[in-house]
Every structure is written in structure tokens, then in C-alpha cells.
Image 1 (tube, rainbow, N blue to C red):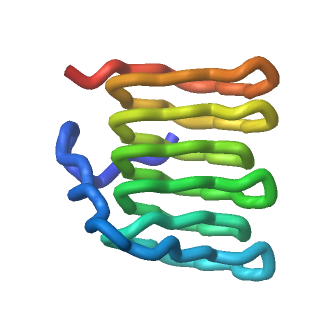
Image 2 (cartoon, rainbow, N blue to C red):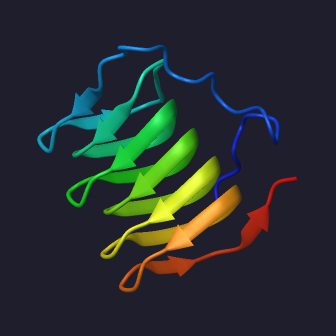
Image 3 (cartoon, rainbow, N blue to C red):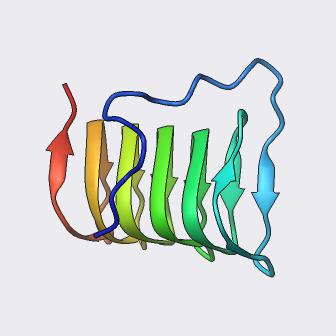
Length: 120
């Protein structure tokens, strides 16, 4: 599994009021890191690290690398490593990653393979 490069417990800063969502649409493939001070929605594919206060990996999206967020919702595919304060694995999510979290919710139909570690 890929290691998260940020020190444990150093979450991104919350998004500023009125911050607009950045969308990586389904026809985009990013090979490299993505960092944003606002919300990010991945509908396409990212091979690398994604760091944002709020991160949604949609049903068509995938991240192969690492995700660092305050709020992470996964509907699509995530492989590598996750560090997020609040994690929601929605129905249809496929997660092959070690997940470090403060809170986690896993819906029926979500799949996860990896270690769950609670940050304190």
C-alpha cells in the first residue's frame, strides 16, 4: 500500500466560505498530485496524491495513490492510502487502502480491503 506523505494528524485547512468545487471530469486522467484549498470532486482518474479539505471520489472516479482530506466520500475506487478526519464509504465504493480516520461510516454494498486505523 502507498504511504501517505503528510504527518499523521495534519489535516488540510477547512475550505473558506464560498469556496467553489473543482471537478476533475470523467474524461480527465491526472498523473501527478492534486492539491486544493477548496472542495474537489474526482469523476475521472488520478494517479498520485489528492489533498483537499473536502474530497468526493464519484462513482466514475478513481484515485490510485493517496488521499488526504478533512471529509472524504468514496463512491468509486480508491487504492493506496487514506488519511481523513471523516470517511464515508458509500454503496458501490471499492477501497483497497489502509485508512486512517477519526470517524468512518461504511454503507452496505461498499467494499474495503486494508487496515482501518483510528487517529487519536
